[in-house]
Amino acid sequence: MAATPDVTVTPGVTAPPDVTVVVAVYNTMPYLTECLNSLLRQSIGHERLEVIAVDDGSTDDSGRELDRFAAEHPDVVTVVHQPNSGGPAAPSNRALELATGRFVYFIGSDDHLGEEALERMVACADADGSDVVVGRMAGVNGRYVHQKLYKEGRREVTLFDSALPFTLANTKLFRRELVEKYGLRFPEDMPVGSDQPFTIEACVRARRISVLADYTYYYAVKRGDASNITYRADHLSRLRCTARIMDHTAGLIPAGPRRDAVLRRHFEWELSKLMLDDFPALPLATRREICEGLTTLLDTYFTDGLREATGVKRRVRFGLARRGAVEELTRAIADEAEHGAPPFLLEGDRAFAPYPGFRDAAIGLDDRWYEVREPVAGRLAAGTELGSAAWEQEGDELALALKVRIGITGDTASAFVALARGALPKSADKPGARRLPEKAVRPEAVGEFTREPADDGTGTLLTARIPVDRVRAERGVRVYVDVAGTTYEIPVRTGGLPLPLARRWGRTTPYRASANRNPKGRLVITTALLWEPPPRTGVRLRRMLSRLKRKVTR
Image (cartoon, rainbow, N blue to C red; front, side, top):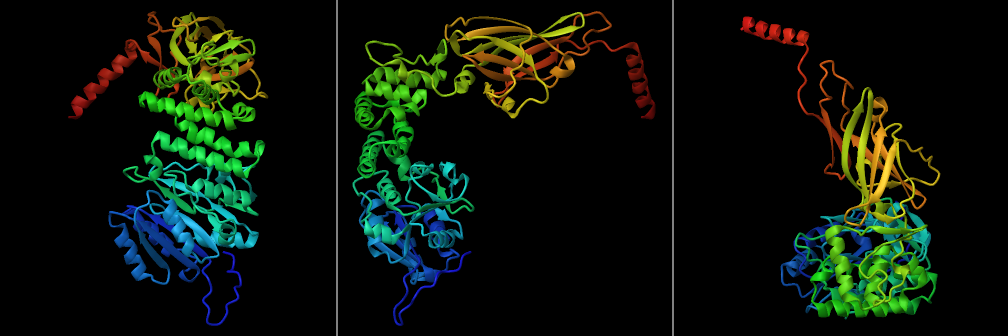
């Protein structure tokens, strides 16, 4: 680790600690004990560390546990008790008033740190002059932590050129001089997300922000009862708090691509979560209020650039909410939860997703909300099913007859079949299809195929008869479908082939083929004996002699 920077100490005056760790506490036993132990085990040392824990009116043993640590480590741990405020903002602000460290670090009282976390982050801030240092985080007990920011360490990032907007928790190292210079504090009237305005403003005003990805600094724990405040907030609370955060951001960053880079997180994350599978079960009045709130935010901040960067499912749901089409939005969410994404309609080189309300003049949505702009591999994969498979044999020639349903309607362009060369790719372990890269060599189609609308009108049924080279096909068969100029590969695993192609005893080949999906969702063709072929005479004789030998031995 980097050496501790020289600090001038006036005789008789105690040097300030390098870092003050703020812990807002409310009913987090037994997780609190591990949190505090992880702080006292920090390699930075007790002489460079200050811990200020504020008990926000806990009703479990959290307050007593804090007092125990303070009694055992009075040179490090300071405890403040106060009536419950309803969230982490007020206790965090109280701790900031008492902090004396050159840097301040915030930790959830149910989380814990890696042993070298504080030492590494302070060394980075001193070496690079960073006002904010972000250390790699990991989730525990199924806690989700966005990982894109931690793919690599970077000496300098901004909110506008990285995944930092998707990592806005205050669990970072902040230079306290920056915090006090701009009077950064947490809004105490926000039940959820109160750390985001603080973090966003600190990152906007920081001279430098650094990301450390070489070590796990922070372990975010999901409690066994999922009682973390993030999981408790209801839909309307989350909507109102997100609106506050977005308005605060707009006051810091002028309209344009830089503001969009930050607000994109809120459209993709907080606002999209308001329209998940639990939306249809909400009271009608709540659904209407959510749509009204979304409309205000969409009208104010959802620019053309943001809309272009948003996937079709989110765009459609935002569009329905914006038009006040509450029933259509409810039906779109419920239908997709039950049946999956709808098939898409091809018209020339354009693809549309026919969600409820598609081209409904009464709702007034235009095609921009329904056009599929992102790669359609996901759409094709979601609607791809292997309907049936059968081996067909004429003399020594073997063929595989397939029926494949794809979730598209309209002109599906050309298709269809080629055999695998070499081992199947890893994508063969995943359901559906993969999109071939533009530079990939397109295989030449073999066999015969026909195309017709599926009986339910929501897809297309492709029927093919593929001549099979036995040796090559043992590696697997790949079906290729060309959709609107893009080629998709559907790997089909073969569990075996009928061997030999003809039997001496003159009966039909005793094999059948069946199609199914294995537990991983992979399309699988298996072969099985319809009947056991009679063994040849020599085989019978050897079996009889073997049984006779066993009797004599006994």
